[in-house]
Image (cartoon, rainbow, N blue to C red; front, side, top):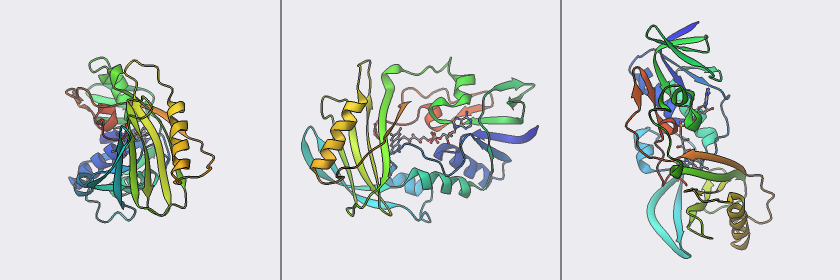
Length: 269
Ligand SMILES: Cc1cc2nc3c(=O)[nH]c(=O)nc-3n(C[C@H](O)[C@H](O)[C@H](O)COP(=O)(O)OP(=O)(O)OC[C@H]3O[C@@H](n4cnc5c(N)ncnc54)[C@H](O)[C@@H]3O)c2cc1C
């Protein structure tokens, strides 16, 4: 059985940042992820200046600074704020490599606690366990779910696609509360000719046909001459945004990032 003092499950930004910090402090740590990197992660990839500072991203080569246009209830406005865009496909891989920890390709299924240690699928053993597996994190499911159930009112449903497209304008565009939808749609330009297009919003016990809102966005992008006649194949995703976050540690198990429900309303959707 492979032993490490700390095992992190999940190599997204939460897990890789945790790994990076532990490594900087010479703490023995490995990371497990079910996917091979680089991997696609549905996300608009819009980051704030605080992220650039806190993650010390001045060396990261693929950030684009965009002009920021918003449309609230049909009114267009240019916002004078810094709007940075990255592609999660590249960004997560870069962060994970930068962390410098050993990464194992392993889908975690079963975790048990035994004699003060955490045993993962009878293959990995640790003293401290960090759950960074996103919305369906196995650490959350095994140890936190009962104490910290998720609030169905905070369930977000999204559809998204990132495409290579010849679009020269450096811009982030968002349209809020259109078409009787409690959410917003976006079109965000990325470095090297990529566009991220999506729509997401809260269910709040309402039946929402997200595909209808996606189609509405595609029609608008056609009309605005932003993306013309493109055969999209979007993917859907659901996750929970922030509610209460007081239980992020039980014994030596921790949850971070989406596993802890830390995404806020303004991180698209
Ligand atoms: C459509 C959409 C748009 C978004 N746009 C933005 C945005 O513009 N800006 C923003 O800040 N946020 C945005 N978000 C939110 C953001 O994507 C998440 O908050 C962020 O990815 C959370 O990072 P994380 O590291 O916690 O989890 P994730 O990035 O989800 O990483 C979790 C990792 O855990 C791995 N994993 C999961 N289960 C297992 C298992 N059983 N065994 C091993 N590994 C496992 C997965 O493979 C994955 O690599 C968006 C989300 C969506 C869905």
